[in-house]
Length: 400
Image 1 (cartoon, one colour):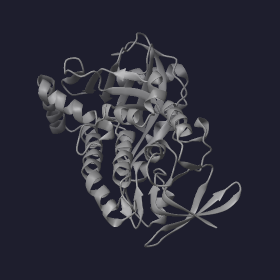
Image 2 (cartoon, rainbow, N blue to C red):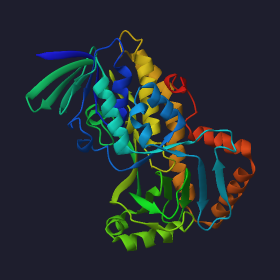
Image 3 (cartoon, rainbow, N blue to C red):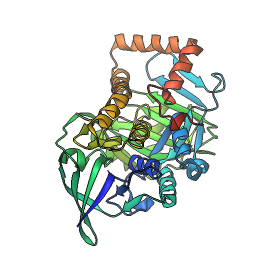
Image 4 (tube, rainbow, N blue to C red):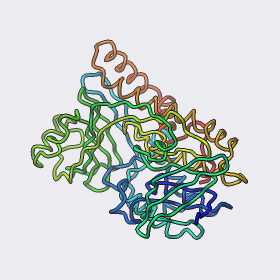
């Protein structure tokens, strides 16, 4: 027997769960399909990454009722220091000097996952299937037909709109025949936490080097989050260094701006690749989050961009009599494409610009740092874009 739904969301990670919450009170019958059990430790995206959440993202999560479950674990970012080893000058952004309360916050992905699960438990209309794995689909003119594998056996569903929120290696994207454009940066990001000699008090650093960027993020008290980019060939060796050797390596790359580091936490390398879907929609189907675009973490735009996908899609499908109609999907593409193109291009361009050590580019970067450092107006524009105020911002994220 085939169960019929208006919207099926495949993937219960950070973006898929956010979309499901956004649609819980809609007129449509919605189901969230997730291969992992609904527990923090079972969900791969609920890991130790330190997420830098933009102001628009925080406001969007608040509008969804998620932020009340996450706020206590978040640490504000109030000052940002950006520099490049070997270049002259640096940029210092101070939210108080720019008339802003904060640029955003740092929140571990695990804590955001915990908050999303708590909010999902409060949903009253949403149907949740977990664990359930999508193993086949057939997209037709009137509906998408799916086969799921569950502990109880095979299950058949049909939907008027299929949402692929199933990550970088998306089964939905592949089954729909949507190709990808991929860039391997030949780097991995080692993510961990550190103890600091003194509290960071809202200070964040982004330090660019020939070997890749290093980000130090405030985590409250004397703890900091570290994102250390290294060549992929060296990632396993560096992650496996003993604590003393690892701290020495971090200081060699980052310096002593934050004082002395100690007591690093568990270390895990993440390969850095850009994966862009060649289309955002297909017949009665749409991709969001990492299934649509996985970007370099430089600039911290991954989840921020994915949440904007989810909020925009929710706004478009809620009033639609047919959420999978061609005009609804076309409107989604028109709305998201400018933000997607600009954000993914910015991330990629920044990686290439900051990783190039030729003399002309070093001079241009130094001039750029100087120009930005001297202009409060330019600093404010850069800060607002980084906070997510770009393009067609969801009404939910502007509600506060």
